[in-house]
Length: 141
Image (tube, rainbow, N blue to C red; front, side, top):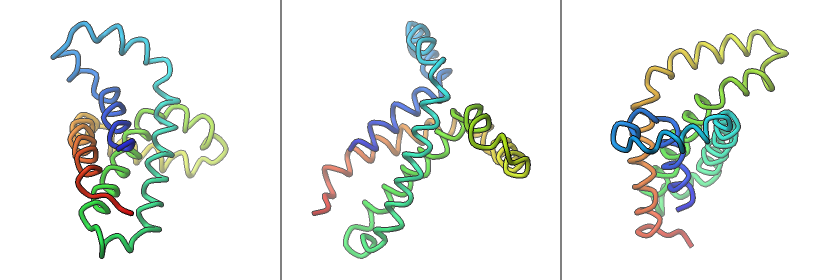
């Protein structure tokens, strides 16, 4: 359930234009979050990567709870991508500044994924809501 809630929050930060078109008074709240957007992105990028690693390590769930495993993997993938997009300036500054080849590759990946940020944000809201519902429906003991 935590993954779902955090994914929804991250998606809201990632698609501010969608939120502002529905709630104009949300602009001041989003402006308060903007200076921390890079750090939020880095944290969620690593959180998403950790979710992917968790899903791979627990691939046995495919036999006992395939819907939950697919949900966890999809949510973690979207979370890692959105976190990468939001945290890219800081990731570039802190982690890739010493390696030009890695920096170029990261810029290429961002160029491919950045136009899809709005769609990814909407997908994140949908997957996050499903993760919350699925956490009640499919519990793993």
